[in-house]
Amino acid sequence: MEIRIGSLSRDAGEARGAALVIDVFRAFTTAAIAFDLGAERITLVAEVEEALAVRQRNPAIADILMGEVGGQRPDGFDYGNSPYEASSVDFAGKTVVQSTRAGTVGTAAAGAAGCDPIYVTSFVVAGATARALLSENPLPERVTILAMGDQGVDRSDEDEHCALYLRNRLEGRNPDPEALRKLIMAGGATQKFFDDDTAAVPPSGCLASPGSGPLRLRNAREPGGRPAGSAAGGVNDFAALPYIATVP
Image (cartoon, rainbow, N blue to C red; front, top):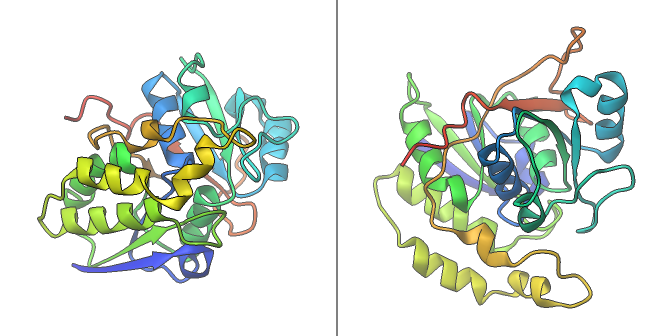
């Protein structure tokens, strides 16, 4: 199995084979929490406008709009992109549309590039993601690990380290998650969460020891037959079925 690590939006559009799309701070940590709290389905969109349009066209799949632009909740959204905020939301049986400037954009780009399967991932689901990919039959010949970074433009410590962690796990090694957590907590990207002007969530929740269930993307069609998965404002879906919260 050939494993390639790429970074940011520039590499997402050139991804090949299976794709692991990383957004630790914070999209795919928040998504994992939403599923763990009972969300039925999360639909990923690349743009805020697309999320609002999905709710207007098909409100049945958009009980909750969740996302951020520049770290802030967009107008018309119910919640931002904070795992801490999400941890107190009643997601039971709810459908969610999520839009962020890094993870969801990278996922749409990887889908448009033809990647299959696609897993969206972060530290809280990293171990389960590696196990799930290694159980694919047939095993992918090529894997692209995408560290989406800050806004999909600037590299970030947490996503780059998560990419290295995943590569090690896929190659049969077991890095120490606690050592990685300490390294990231000391990094520059983490410090913004302690700034009184921008603080929205304690970062430690994004760096919990990996061990939750995998988030495997599946191409979806919205009710009414509208195809999903275009690069610009594309809609993708990962449903509760592949998210197995009981995986040790």
